[in-house]
Length: 128
Image 1 (cartoon, one colour):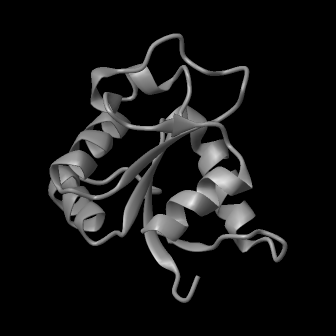
Image 2 (tube, rainbow, N blue to C red):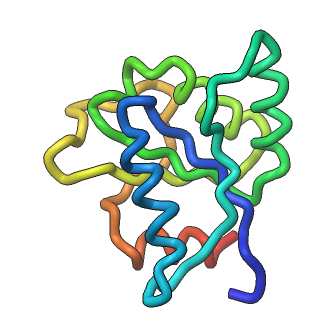
């Protein structure tokens, strides 16, 4: 990969650990992928949606971390919907094998959701 992709990570606040872990994996010298994390790390003020949309539009892709928490994560679902509206390539990654939801929210319709492996993440990043 010649350049680092700018990646927005959409996650439920309860799954912040997964975002931190994914960013850490990208920094691991043995990892086959790397990216610049553009996710929202802190809640924003009343202009959050405008700022977040702008950040998403400036990204090469979005990774949505999917767990049982996703269906109730209004902010994450809005980020996923916005990524689709803005035409930003989107890939779902399950946070764990044990925490997979039995069904996914409508916002994830048509989105490929794969298991969390270096190969799956690298393939998405390489395709951007």
